[in-house]
Image (cartoon, rainbow, N blue to C red; front, side, top):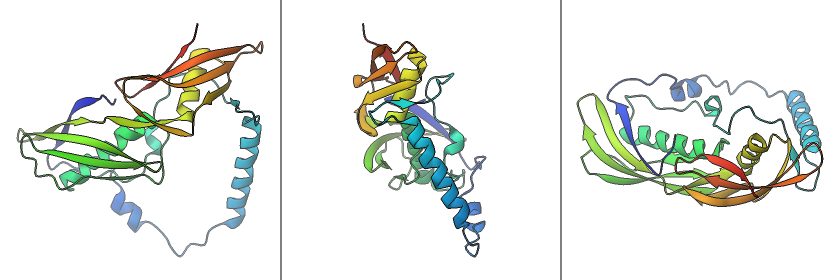
Amino acid sequence: MIQSARRHRLALGLAAAGSALALAACGTDESAEPDDGAAEEAAAEEDEDTDADSGGDGWNTAEVPTDPPRLDEDELPDEEPDGEDELSDQIAWEAFTDVAEMAVVVDEDADWQCPDIENDEGEQVTCTVTYFGEDYDYEVTMEGSDGFMINYEAEMPEGPLAREAAEDAVRYSSEAEEVRCDMDEVVRTPLDTDDVARCEARDDDGETLDYTVDVTVYGTVTATRDH
């Protein structure tokens, strides 16, 4: 989980399981014709779901989650580099996944990159993750290697908080399905910040409960009822 500063270790020369960038490129059949009918049907179903879940007054309805908001790693793109790729590419991927963990929602148009890294002890570089149109710095300090592992410390001063994650944090805390938050779809916030957003939950009796959404030093989102 993300911290404002944490140490990372990368294996030297070992292929990480699940790397599929080359396979994705080779496996794409550009000659296949899209199924327009299926796409239109899926879009119509999505529109129906949206209409059913939103009352048009800011209230959104969804099931109460059984766990606090966490990133579903299966939704990450199949682009993880392996141990044979450039060190800058490997650390850029780590930067991307740290930002995604904080947002909880995956941005399919995200971009992540680091400058060339020599792995000299004490070397400092700033990587950039573009997420929902915003650039986030990922500050890296290299700590050298021990022959098998590359060690470095990374700090992410700010990150994205998605309203969807904030709403689920309130649902988890309140056990209420109907929630609304006074915030944009995604907001930029430092880690370890209180009162990032104000939300409301509506219980089965129709009572409205006020909640405050915070982001911890670990980059996780929590919701606390106001008293």
